[in-house]
Image (cartoon, rainbow, N blue to C red; front, side, top):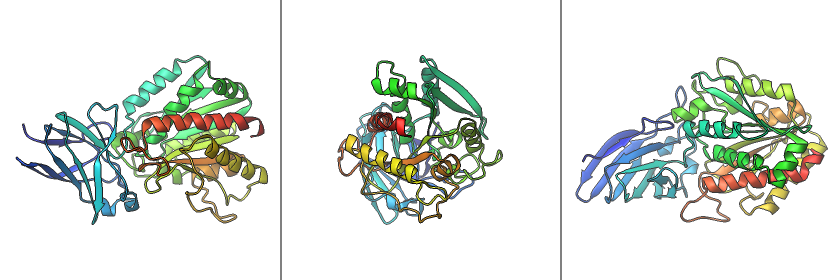
Length: 376
């Protein structure tokens, strides 16, 4: 049987340059394909077939010119033979080439930048959540590829909470986080969920970028646009995803917002705020820092030492969602970042940062919100 490498499926991304099949093992040279109409690339997801019991060496040769080459040192690719459990592969990076080594037990093994969250799983999530008591589902409109933009609303309290994820489609840990948030919020016996549903109306957009997700993009939508640089003036022809969600926010107002992401380079979980927005208030800032510090106490998977530089007064980039939402609505807004690498403070040698940890982090984030909801 000949060795095969393929990516013609939901969120697939790789180009095969060469395959060498010898009695000693299998080696291949590969490259990641850029996002459509964009220079961004880093996400990969492909299937290796007919290599059971063989030593395999996969070389992604264009790593040096990827969007974030600083994300490769210390990084490990994920692999799975059942597409449920994603383990760390033996991975190293040198001279612009990412080398992945494994000896699969099965004739079909999937390799990815992070555990994928497929659009089929997204539709399963929407179908399940929409059937839960007290959950309203609404399609806000369609993307440029004709995919639905899904909004789920839970609770009937006066505080308006917006949780949205995966503006950058390759950051699939963000939708795993959303799955965890929905699991907790729909549990009618969970005290945190009951309190939040009583005191807040919670709006969730599990996937802000369906087109990029299905196309196997790292950072952009169907026409190569980075949605998290469109929040100041989204348009129907370039960024309908943002336009639809921001219009829905305008209709409800926003008291608290969390934009969920993944970071390529920093081996930690952290949040970024809205320092530098023109109208920032002392109350907004105090609540943001209280949320951050309380989350650090609640879970060892979160920390406050590492993160992004803080913008100077009046210098915030209002094209980014967290800054735009904080400025536009006076909201307590934040960007949550999870690692593609691992949490170096609490590493897991088998799974690294994982779907399970993303799911649990969401539940911890909601617990902190419940503690503060009266003051937001």
